[in-house]
Image (tube, rainbow, N blue to C red; front, side, top):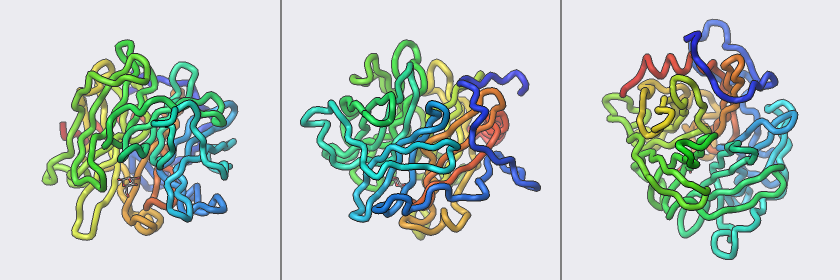
Length: 332
Ligand code: BMA
């Protein structure tokens, strides 16, 4: 695929480690995982399912930190190398949300997309049940909150990094109040980041005979990466075992102008819980990606994923190889 074009700014300082000798995996774990321990903050119970982006001469992010009251809160963080993080002990206080939407209840599983000069944060926001909160920042210090994108119940709201057909675009996963035993990914558009419509179905869980890791529910992961082969989307899938849910993740390619059209979708997972920090923790057997950095010049990608709802890990891969894997193992 020497003709492959990967959009985005070159990121030569991307955190990176080469594939271990002997491995053929399209995505491999960082040898020093987890990169963020559960108790990095004085009062944190766990830090996981978090979003990072390139920022100034380093990186910034929005982190899911559950505190020792077991409240789900969001914190800004900064890093020079993308591996060692300074996370603000104070929670993010979103401004301008007004008395209704701006009333903080809980927030979790943030994503951050850089669109037209602003960093847009979407997260699972408590408003009579989980829905998709939306806010923007320029400095990761002041965050301006907008209306929630959807009615409850919804999770895994993930923005595309540019407008599509002149409108902002978001993937989401309508659900119900709790640990839903169902869930499909949908696509929606907005002219202004406030009113969302033109909803389209993207994909449903796979039949378990075909791809069991994604047979119960699925949800978009990091902000999709634009390539000449389509939008590369990493997404999580859930298997219901006799001993509870197992969260793995794989990849899909979506049509560039009509992203509800799935061009390819991996039948195999990229990562499924195997390492001890993925298998044990507050919620065992969870790998949950919320962010990916990429270097458009070399095709390298660094994925941040929550491990067992407790700590944050990283995994690395080459975008052309992951596209190849997605097509070769496709169940579409
Ligand atoms: C989902 C979300 C995620 C979590 C996962 C596994 O419903 O709550 O934040 O990682 O369950 O517990």
